[in-house]
Amino acid sequence: MPQIKSILCPVDFSEFSVNAYEYAQSLAWHYKATLFLQHVLYSLQPFGFWNISPDSYEKRCGELRAGAEQQLQEFATRHTRTEIRPQCFVQDGPVTDLILSLAEAQAVNLIVMGTHGMRGIDRLMLGSVTEKVLRRARCPVLAVRKPAHHVTSSVQDPEPVHLRKMLLCTDFSDHARHASQYALSMAKEYGAELTLLHVLEDIPRSADLHSATEMAVKQLEESIAPNTREECRVKVMVRIGKPYQEIMQLTLEAQTDLVIMGVRGRGALDTALFGSTTYRVIQLGPCPVLAVHIPVASLE
Image (cartoon, rainbow, N blue to C red; front, side, top):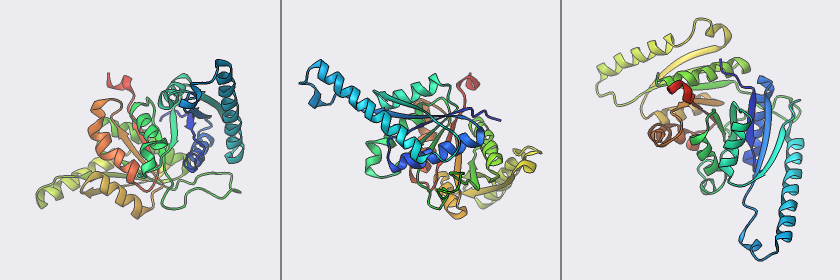
């Protein structure tokens, strides 16, 4: 089973960050993990600073950093509901690079980030950063958007998020098998029901469809370890159509709380799988998505 000993949650103080932090602290609480809370200041040298003296510039930068540090501490105090106390970092520079470098420096096992979905602002602010982190991160990334149904608990409830139904999307690849380890671990931690889904695409004839469906069901059943059903509730499902459309449809029908998907990793070769399926589910789907990269060492 995967080890989740440290979690990084970058925030920009928006409502999307609040949603992400709910999930981050919930996972940190379940896995007894160290939680890092990060805020990255946008460049401290906007055009208006070019004509001021170096001393004035340094003073202004210091004020901005101090204000951001106070704001991050207040954010943590206001929104933390477990005994987990995050370690706070405020940095200045390229947002994506600083998120990834902090994740590397702290040996983070999971990054949890908010995403705006399909709104236009998504392409300019946190959403575009989330996309870049998803493509370049060496660890799994949980992209959190506000779910279509109620998942977060009341303020009085010490458990920030209740995950009762999870969906693992698999194409039987090594990437999907690696993602299944996270899905099983999280389903066990939360006592959630886990559905294993495979989507058949481009089946030309009904006879082929019947045979392909039976084979896919058999593969799904065989992928479940004997002791898994004793640890959590597991069921399998096969659907026909475009993968991202079927994933989103089932997620809505079943009121799924979390989707888990394996992705190929970083670089241009990732575009086909990540762009056409995982990315569409993250942007268009009704619930958070855990994108799991297979470790680089495992591919060598």
